[in-house]
Amino acid sequence: MKAIYPGSFDPITYGHVDIIKRAACMFDELIVVIMINEEKTPLFSTEERLEMLKETVGDIPHVTIQASKGLTVDFAHREGASVIIRGIRAVMDYEYELQQSTVNMMLADDIETVFLLAKPMYSFLSSSSAKTVAYHQGDLSRFVPDNIAKRLKEKLHQQ
Ligand code: ADP
Image (tube, rainbow, N blue to C red; front, side, top):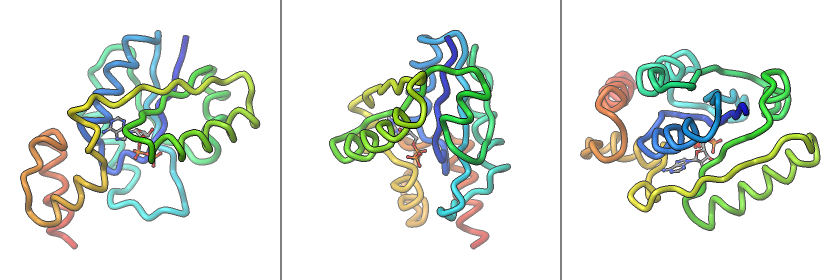
């Protein structure tokens, strides 16, 4: 069975890496897909986020990386995937995810959303908290892998 794990990954954190490793064990194939949302202004370009995902999780067996525009369910259909993976950290995520997955159910009833609970050690972790810590020159070692910490520092230095 094929699954997709959509997100912004701006940038990828240890929380995302954990979900990717766990989901890769559950499915024959997992496509990690950057969904390009024109309403949001990401810190990193799509190309940079693709590079960072490849550097960080590109070697995990059964995992491939892509970027896509449009609806997540349309991407899943094009790829022949029947499962969407999402991570849940807290009640706040649940409300948003419930809304998104219900919309997806209305659009495509052949696709299931599977939620993986964040490990407690990562439940505080988000791309935006990593960006805030980086902005204030804090210790990123528990947030993102070293290659991502380096890129975050370079990016914020450029700005
Ligand atoms: P989006 O903009 O689609 O929410 P994100 O890149 O922020 O994209 O997150 C992608 C998915 O990963 C979401 O389902 C989110 O809840 C989940 N996620 C984010 N951070 C973590 C974490 N620390 N642990 C587990 N899941 C997470």
